[in-house]
Length: 361
Image 1: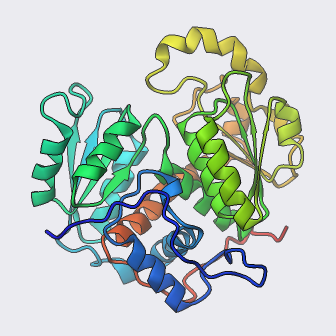
Image 2: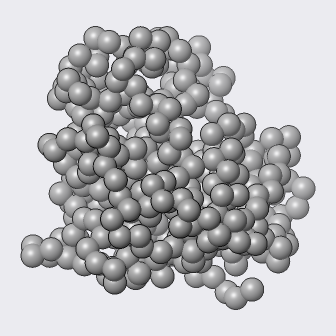
């Protein structure tokens, strides 16, 4: 296999509008083609690895593979994907497996829940073995450094399927779901309530990439990491989006188009569950909190949810909830990512179909 270029926080050239800022959305076939070429062979360790145009290209491709799946049925014939998971999974595992299978490729799952990566043999030795057999590697780990080290050592693309720092595939699928619902994420008022964790980090960065206005309400001591905040603000300044951090969940929810929450205690922090419960109780998403949002606002959760903890049954099962749309769209978003990184992307003009519920803001 040939060598692979690992690009972190890429700053490749993009199409700009009349004010010199990156134009949001793919503007031409050439722009889509250029973004696809830049992504081929790349890793996806963080949302920050993507430029604004690369994010737009992935989003457009996700709409295409969902709405015209027959056009991609053999796009990844004979490609082999291996998944090393240190953490339990339902949605991530099944959607990656189903995704590559419907593109013509094959998935191999390796359960690492009892043997963390790097314990039996070095990550470098693993990478140099796996790159001889596989086309792409998907990692779900406790430590983000495991993913970046494996990416640095491997000649094949590496995808972060969840680490302690980020969950990029989840965030891409979530904003793809919002595009289906609202037509565009640009200008969307997106609110995250709860722990400033890995999911929150990727959501902030994705919101910034797509020009959304992202508010995060978290208890003191549980805000997102400063490095993520600074990067998200830097991106938002380019796209016309914004990042707002606050502690008041009602203020954050007021006027929101979407309200998102996650568990108060992520995997790996179970020993803190008792301590965290009373701290996060005021941040529960319930009908009273949703009432402060727009009348047609949606509720979102990455799942699994702790019912009647971070969210009530009435909201999770209610008419504003789109959590199962998010879950379905994990597969379509990940198919787009796989196609981009493995060189199987193509543009399908007019393949993007808006939801009948989409509205202009």
